[in-house]
Image: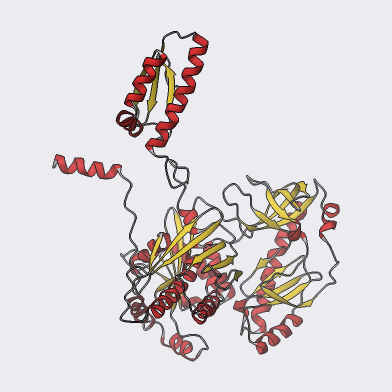
Length: 563
């Protein structure tokens, strides 16, 4: 083996690996490959798709599983539009129902902290303890009279130490405990059961007035127990009564099991958890629009088939087991698209790019023209085109990365009010397809668009990456000069104390610093340190230690050692 090559390789290994450079996703090529797969679908399924009211796009759900994680990607004409990851070592608590106990009430925050038996106490805002309608659906009827309850009633209803049934709405993020609500909701395939609410409603995403009227009649015909309510999900559009009857039966069975645990359980404990990814595929992803589901796991294949047989047997033919030698995500060209989902810079088809920065408080997205290919267009037209491309990609990235909270977008400045309004309307229409609630404001005078997007768990990047243990997530390190200045300041303070206590007796100090800091001191502070030794009558010995943190140092007596 070549020694020089080996040394060079080791030197490279000691450096930070280069960040992967995302390439522009060739949408046309992905669509061609998806079209080829679509043509292999059963003839009857293709005929039904052609006469349906859908958009004609080919939708696939790809699920890969290994010893460490399960990954799910939703492809629309070959392009990844949604991505979920479920590590084996990490449990998803969103949707989990607990029997808890009020530990304390914070009247200033108007919130309660609830012991659930988990690592951190849950945060329960007073507003989440009121029987209120969810913004995602429109209330169309009540099955029971709702007693008026105000925030002022909460401390009397739930004093410290009282038991309470809560459901997790937002998972623990960093040092923040999970957020919970008393408005329990059990989602099914076509409906959501609300056992403590008499409200019935229909998803606002079902916009057709005639369809809403039909679904309203179905709601009125369902045999609901007293005091319970249901909401028809978007997947319930165009479905017949029998689907809702079967879904309601399964939901009531599920709630009966929870109710039994509530009576039997003593003290804070878990009552119910959402199904794993395989269960959610059947419930949430396998809609009429999905053409097929492909998994490389025989275990998942069996679970999904069993779930489909229970709720939608006729969709059994859409479940496929992948058994080829090429890795599943590589075969469907998903790996390159995943790399893009983690990249700070995301290229746009025409040469521009967006830069995504995720912080504790907000998400900042910058839009750049980059090497945009103008093809001779006017500048205003170029800027408008890049902004529209960026808007489409930003909406996609929000779904892929599970971005939420406050999102600030700095589009390229546009002088035309018409172009600004066109961009806002395009952004709003693109986000209207999102399953999460959102608010969006027009472009401000400073050229900034602000979006607030609901998020139930931490972003994909925070799931897959960890703060740097060296810089503690700051992203930067103190310069050698700044650290050297702190060393000199600490040395001056130490010498002042030593001279006072030892009455100018000879002092010998050993200063241990990082090699980079020592190099700076030798190059720029050598004369200063010599003067200090002469003036103070001290002996200073400097030592370099590459094992210590760049910003750390130690000043000890000559006979002391770093413990």
